[in-house]
Image 1 (tube, one colour):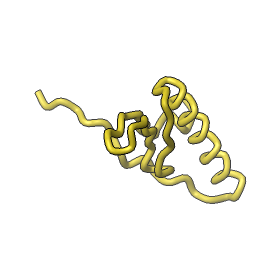
Image 2: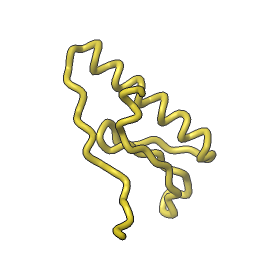
Image 3: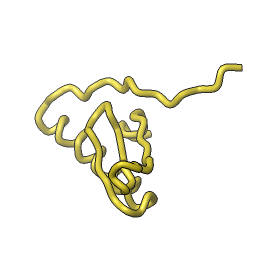
Image 4: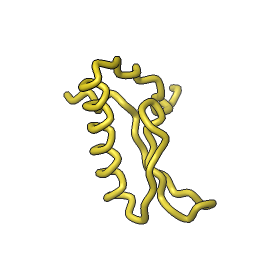
Length: 73
């Protein structure tokens, strides 16, 4: 498992901006684009880059806090 797999990532449509927004709040604010599949792939790559940057600088990687909602039985 990669470190980036610990972080919740998602792509959603922004009615206000009329584009898809890719998010990973624990590590970055977001990116945008017209193709949700391509955007998710780009988001995953950027998250890998962010983690690599933290490691190169010897900084601690922020702990994952944002989790997807789970259904309550």
